[in-house]
Image 1 (cartoon, one colour):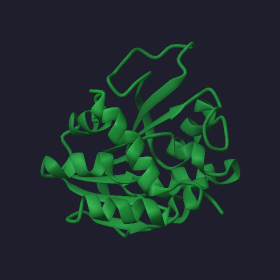
Image 2 (image 1 turned 120 degrees about the vertical axis):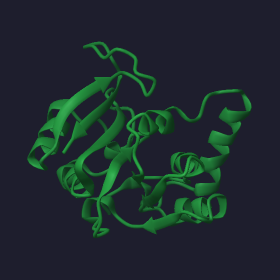
Image 3 (image 1 turned 90 degrees about the vertical axis):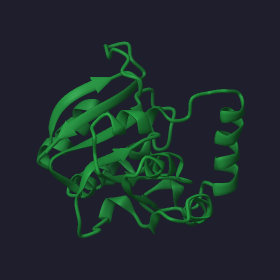
Image 4 (image 1 turned 30 degrees about the vertical axis):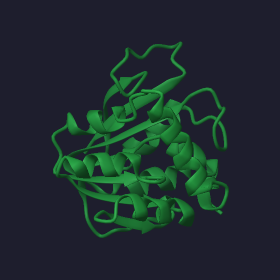
Length: 191
């Protein structure tokens, strides 16, 4: 199996966690706001989970496709966002035969792919970025999630090999400054 989320996550339980956080007043739409700041008309939400980001983007009139390898995540996403195009697929071999203004990988997506397949995941997601478009990924740097650490140098290299160039990096989805002490990175690469 390429991605841990193939069977290790339950869509209902995953969504319940985010619903509980939202009830506390936590802002659940930082990723969507950042994506919208790039003024896209189309977005691929790669590793969409139960659709939190996709659904918010669709509310703003964007053409969104959400992809996840986990059947229970996609089933929940379909119930929450019935008008959105949801695809159950492995991101490391994804081929939707189209490109998007923005491809977003929110919530540690690369970390839930086996390390030996991460370059393939980056390449297949990058292949969906329109000329002039962006790929935006956010993931932890402390090795606590999924299969563990993914060095930024390795991620940047995989992006470069896929025809994308680094343009920005923050420590959070709200644009916090990134430095050597950051434990999270939100990175923007452009085609």
